[in-house]
Amino acid sequence: MSLTEEIEARGQKAVDYLIQFCHKNIFPEDPLRKASLHYLNSGGKGFRPAMLQLVCGALNGDEAMAIAPSAAIESLHVSSLLHDDYMDQDDLRRGVEAVWKKWNPTVAILAGDVLFGVAFSIVGDVENITPELKYGFTKELGQIYTKLCEGQMLDISFENVPFIELDEAQITHMQYLKTGVLFEFACVTGARIALNKMEDEVIDVIREYAKLAGTAFQIQDDLIGIVGESNKIGKPVGSDIKAGKRTLIAIHGIKNANDHQKEILLQTLGDKNVTEAEISNCVNVLSDIGSIKYAQKLAKQMATKAVDLTKQLPQNKQTELLKEFANYMIERMF
Image (cartoon, rainbow, N blue to C red):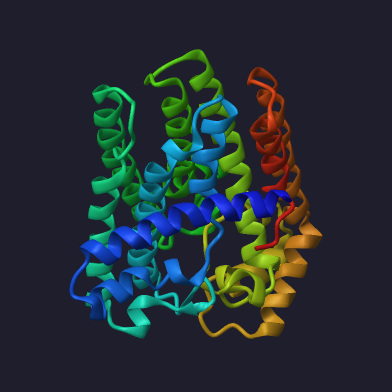
């Protein structure tokens, strides 16, 4: 199988586990269960649950033991999406109508809360591991969700901060909290299941790999949000420009623009009524400044370092997939 097929297969195992659990435990079916499963039934990249299983296998663990925790991570991720879409007023997610739009904000909030609870219900459903590990998974999952909320709060608060007053370190920290911590938790949890211990030198290697690959993932997401195709990314082209998202690309562009370029960027970024032509012009300006190439180069550096770290892992099929995955993070366009 190709890398994408390997990822999809593992992601689907997690989703199937999660859907089965929800059918048995979420009532009423309409609208609560339907809303909770709306995004799960609409595809998704499945990177986080797949990574948990892959890392477990790379360290010679039984990937089947990693399915329940990987389902918990997907549940927590979708829980945050249900809330974020309403806060950001995004109409589309994974190519379908956002839950808050299809039903209403109350249903979206409750569905997100339900999946939050589901995540804690299943994260420790792993046989043959120590009670310390099960407790550790549950405790850390709570800490992770707190950080996700911190990241979302920073993202929202940054909307009221002029671009010129923000720097790359602030943006990187915000994005790490919003997405990186869950990606890191997925990889580290896979390692802990394989080794049946909370800490180890190999786990430290996996943690660093996850930080690098996760950062590359987020930078590529920023690129896709600007130059991606709507039918591939499941949301309108240029939505990040229209929303005035504070990204590394936008911050780099503002900091390095001449007066004319800066005027165009500041007029376009965050304009809810911006036209497709104006979005296209904004992208061209960012390209002329070198911001898009800058982001691509940064992501490439992160991916290369992540690949180098895999030399310290057992050399098997799953480790080869981890190498491919790090590079795939900066090549994908969805």
